[in-house]
Length: 459
Ligand code: FHN
Image (cartoon, rainbow, N blue to C red; front, side):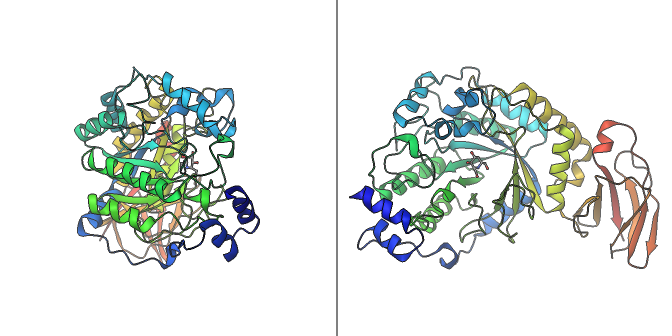
């Protein structure tokens, strides 16, 4: 009966009849998120948002059972291997028996992130595969109870980040290809061969129980980075996530914890920041970044190669220059840059990625004042580059400009202009509609060609 109901609902997707069929008689859908109750962030939360914007650079970590398969010799999104290779949940579970990352050293990770210039870290506490990478009483399908490792990597990372002065956020997938109560399934994970039945509300209770653990066992955390909502976007369960209740729970446990949800929609009430996946805010090369730019703090998430989880064969690493330019381009759009690396199954970070992070740290050491604690600048992004600003200062980031004179439609008067590289003076001419800078040529040093940064001190 349930199957027939589901098939009918799929055929009628989006209609009121489909909603009735899928919810069953008497069940009530959540109000559409857009119409949800208002949310007033607390003072701690607003302060955390400021901190978040000041931070500008974070490291993203996708680590789970999927890391063991490393994409199974195929290019592509390695953490999707369960779905891609149609591995039934009962077989996929076996991976837990072999998960033993004995080389994991949380302090070494934290040192790498710190040296990279990152100010925060986001790690997958549970990805779509449904496996909890933390000690969870809500399900035995977790790293402590189901693996020979028996350690809680999130607890170790929380302690290491705390010591290093990095904030730790937890990624949490709402979509779950393993939990029997994640039913009806959404648009993915159909080869998992789970029983065609389950109790959706019990699943949400489970999700909330795990979130409660994440918010009470690891000290103050930066926030929760949700993903997977989109799995039910086109089903009758679209509004059955009990988001308001979940968000209220998070904020009641830790008012300063920031909530973001990678649903690719305009932010819902209760969210504290908006993220963009592999696109700068306002761009849409991925096809799903169609939501407009909200007033909330912004973040762009990016990969180092083509995968989030560790991929054994994907060597198509973005250069440090490309990543620095993305970081700067995000900052010029008032957004943070969250750069991903997929730790290996032995617990080490990929050496190629460690090198890139180190190089980014070198750049930030020298040019960080033009990124950290800045906001998007007074001149909107241009084909040649972007601007950022701090009180009394504007930074001009010249990413691609061959000529000497560069016109900026800047209305504020400039006291002096200096090249951040060496403090050298940059000639400034007042023009009727703004100013003209006479740019020196790049110094020939590799880093300088990535981004020529000019600091304008305002009058
Ligand atoms: O499906 C996931 C994907 O595996 C990865 O976690 C990224 C990170 O932004 N988000 C999802 C796709 O939107």
